[in-house]
Image (cartoon, rainbow, N blue to C red; front, side, top):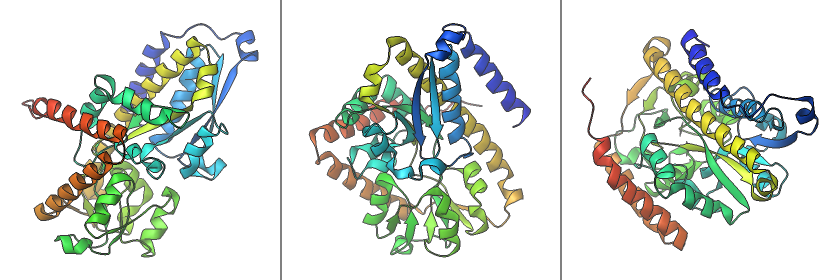
Length: 353
């Protein structure tokens, strides 16, 4: 961890620490409520694990030790794509995961995570907290005995690693690519073959030609995974302009908590979500700056205009299909599109610097 990052996190922790509800006492510790949280990430996974760990630490500090969070990583429970079921069934009280993993349960989960060619992080956060986003998300998850809260964002994600250059839409025909969520459906619509593979298996799958391409997150995590060693073409993004992670919470467990403990959880969620975005921005920027030196084989590309237009068209078709699946889906799609139309002119007013 570099000095500036230590300093930043220290200041953030100290500032938040001023709101601690009370000193930890032996009585509070003895009667502490412990929540079990399952993540979709392996232990030690950069940025993502930081958010969950920071959350757990802040919950204990803010509650004076009366509320604690025990984290089981994917290494422990062995089922990164079953966190939804774990929390819904009460096997775990909480989860730290990503909503688009559950699109087979309900397709609206995809666009509650991110929408291709949709809102960026600032715009999406404004939709969640200033628009209808949070209420719509709780309505969507409430049907499954769950609550969902913002849990961190890595910002715009890169378009992925490809073994061959994508020059025309024909180059996507039959291409096997790891890509989740609505973006996977968009790729399928233009002829690619989307697959879902756990993160720990991605390097091997690309190295052994099980897949032809993959998207993961961004420069820092991608280089940590070693993808630059097995693919030369690295594409800029379009499919996840603001992939928001989520804290899933079992609704019955939430109701059983005191108002004070619910307030602690919300505060710690918001803090860890904000700090994860800051962490991701700093680390991605540093890795991007060093990429040419550390990986001279990598060729940065953007998708050609005709490919982008095909992907945009397929996205619009898929959003129309999603809106037709339910009244709630229609409201979510409409709300996002209207909010983007509202904020985009303001976003496009660039600051001179």
